[in-house]
Every structure is written in structure tokens, then in C-alpha cells.
Length: 173
View (cartoon, rainbow, N blue to C red):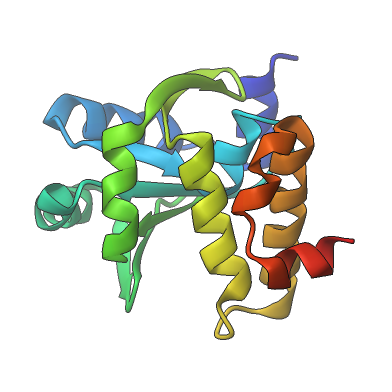
């Protein structure tokens, strides 16, 4: 089984939600990139997840929200839009925190679980994971996953260790 088929099987994406979402973003000219765990998968050994985290260029956020609401279920939260579709367990989160908007400018196309997609630079992915791991409002289990993702990134690129905040490095030892 190919990586993409496996990911779609794990997410029970019987509705073609992933394909439809990506096609909609690409066809509409939305500038976006992957962040989060799937972006880490572009730079380190992949880990399968039900989540797909996306950053959108700040100028495209309002248009993207309206576009997604026409085709999918969208729930707004203070720093994200959660996008879902019946018939799929895939959990898509569009980051609306403006800090992530500039990641799109530095993104490059990389292979993630069998798909070639725009992915935030490894430095930006590390920065986003650091923000998430330091966010006291995040669930402890999510912060632990963020730490694991940071460890995966610096294992694949040891030169990035100096970019990790000292309070996170201490938790990685």
C-alpha cells in the first residue's frame, strides 16, 4: 500500500475530503502551506495522523474562509478554522494566527505521505512547533506531541538545535 492510500485509509476519507480540499485551494489560487505534524513529515520519518494543519497567506484568509464554508463544515475558533466533511475523519485546521501567514512566502513543494504540496520551510515548521509547545492553553498531550515533533526535526537537522528555545531543549533531554 502506498503512503497516500494508507493515510486515506487511516483517516477514513471515504468522501474524498483531502482531494477536494486541496483541489479547491489550488484552483482558487489560495496561497497556503502545510505546517504542523504533516509538515514535519516532509523533513523527518513520517508519522501518520488524522490532522492536517495549514497556514494561509494573511491576504487570503477571509476569501479562504468564505470559499471553504461553501463546500465544507467550518467552525471558527480564536486562532483557527476547523474544516471537516461528512464521510471523513480527516481533521483540517487552518491557522488564523497572523504569525503563521508569512510561512507561506518561504514554503517549498515537498512530498508528504505521497502528495507533493507546499510545505513551510523546516525553520518555520520548527518555529510553529515551538510556539505550540510553549502555549499554556494547549492540551498537555498536544504539547508533548509538539515536543516529539521538535525532536524529530532536530534529529534530521541537528543544526536547528540552536533555534529551539532553551526551556524546550531542557524538556527534550
